[in-house]
Image (cartoon, rainbow, N blue to C red; front, side):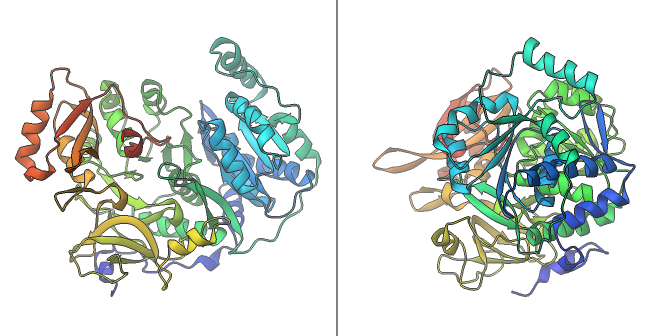
Length: 551
């Protein structure tokens, strides 16, 4: 299909990007560190680290890793929330020629064992709060040879470090006891590295930069191999897209989504680093009152999030007191943005929230709405530069504009496959190398893409397709609804029924209210037949509602 979406591109946004301007992510990182040396790179708990310091400390940790005599391409795990240590360690791993393996700190022992075994991880850097999980896993993962344990305050100056670490360990008591004889403290590893001579490593586009695990909510987790070129491409695609906003070293982005998630890693950690901007790292975004307190007077210019995070902020009365005077970009991804949330966000902040779409296998961005949109339009935007999209049926035939089918993607940001899983890799690509996303979408005649739903989440009622996203959008418009997740359930032999799982903010809201409102906005077969109210809904680490867990 001709790339007719180019007609909607904002002036100045190129149709193609050139990944050859950087030989590796390390090349991109080092350029930023030297260009913006005196500017603040990251802020966490009122502590700043400059680009020059980030450069120095990541070199120290890279030297420590080389001291361990590991082979190029060795997998190194990172298991921590948003702390200053994360970017230091992440860039150190790449600089030393190794592969980063992001791990969710909230993983169970079984999940950690699977990921360490599957990836062949030999070293892990873990926050002390979660080290007991590593201790439990050790006997099952003989390939894990080195454990570096860090504490929350380890990147701070000496006095603040000791105060913070003692509060966390002895007053808040959120560091469970653990015993890992072969572990080394992060601070000692840094001292060791500072005394070791770093040896630069030659990296190429096709070298793997990270293994990003995905599929854990729908089946066994698989490691998507994201190369240096994949990540460079997505940074350049995103950078060119937001260039009309004149983003630069004076910008400040709020990083609440965890950096171990690909959305936050690429959009915040890498893209805004490329601009020399400041990242404000939020360690615990679930603590909404403290989150708001941290950003209240920061005069931030950009923020990324998922629908549930934006919704949680908007439902806290203190959020309206935040200074939004400099805000120019709010970006939503990871799950469908609900119209009710988008409209309220624009009303409170006077800035629209733009919806984007991506997946782990695409590093992650595929589409994004243009900067000139005046308000929420319900689409996931236009394909990024150098990105081709095809909407196909189950046989791989391209469908005409307006017809819903599987969204398929080709571009320099697309993974080369899953780590050591050739069959599963083959299954996600059509013969012409288009990646099958498993998402149902359609084009309009302007080139905007509209996400209908996940293929696997589709509910079939008497032969008719019901997409949970559509039903959730309607129910979320009810003023008394805080959150909603919609699933299909089998009650008897007659087939599936639509079930709505709801968290309410109005105690008087009842099932009849939900059904009555739904009937006004939905065809009869789409109206939920089962309504259940919950205190909270199960979510992923970034706040995406887990439909599988609801089932």
